[in-house]
Image (cartoon, rainbow, N blue to C red; front, side, top):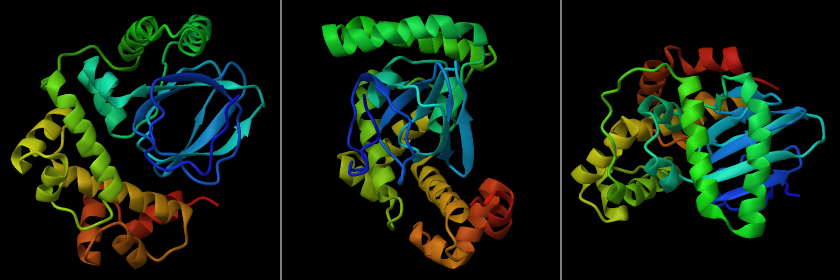
Length: 278
């Protein structure tokens, strides 16, 4: 049985896993570059995820990107729950519906919209745990995971055409490196040229393949990461707004306020008043 290791380094990979975890409070957020699946046959947990408390109820498959800091702050019941992690590159290779992928990459927790799927999910997850941990049948498990996420996407998003361009297989590892580099450095004064140099690509090419996958430029994404980090600090700490702005990578309070207002349609002070918990 697994529980969160508080000494674990941020961004250390989990790889492809499917395991039983015991619910427990987390004194710090976890952050990793896999897509994570949670499933509870009984009970629930509540994450601090972005600026919100989000509860994952029983018998509803939940999916989110582990690169977004997530921290269990409350839970109900003590029965073990299932945690699966899927490598980010594998998730992109599957070319799931773009609207579904876009919501995951923008930091949402998606819940299965069809309650009737729960009995089917319990059967599937038991097999995934057995296959990955006992028989090493990873190929079969990946095929079933792919199919299950296609079905989930069909239940979660409306069926419609999308103009998103698909990302080529040979670009996946490069996009993954870019995402990790930004996640590790967005609080620093980084530029697009720094990112290109760090991953061994021309800055324009890095920007192009990143936008194709994420739907935003590198500069836009860095700003969004900084604002997301600021949201968490505004909600979970009593630090001053000026202190938060500089700690999140902004070099002036005016730029921070302008970016925050553009993304959230409210000021940092209004945001804190609306969402702060304690």
